[in-house]
Length: 168
Image (cartoon, rainbow, N blue to C red; front, side, top):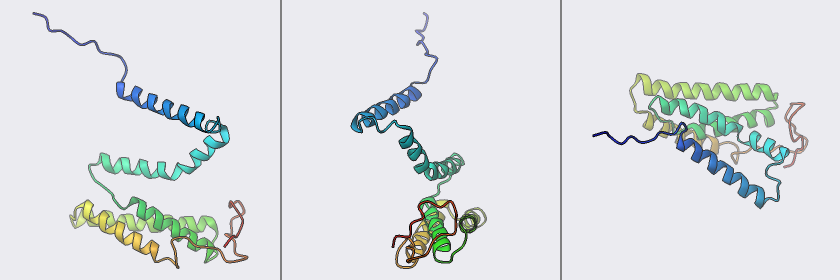
């Protein structure tokens, strides 16, 4: 007796479902915004706004593929962003230097967490949970808020910075 074989399709249903959902979302937003959603300026702004999240997501994929977890990614990126802002606005550092300093702080704190998990064999869940709480507290301890406000007349010393307004 021959076994009934299922006919296999040459495409992945999950991928098609995701593409269909994406198209449905585009259609709904295009109709809801009277066509503004698919204009080049809006798509450019969407790409710019999701760039940080995309970079963090790529790093998280590598961590998850390795079978680990990192709960402190958002808190650490927020702390590094606050440090770069404070260095640029309050200390008057040039924007590239402030960004490099924030990256160095983030790399050092990430290496510290990685060494705690690797060499001391502390579970990554515990290390990154503690790091998340520590980084959120450090960011909240920034002068009076998590965002630095420029005083009247202060500017970040970057010729291409946008916007160049100094609203308080």
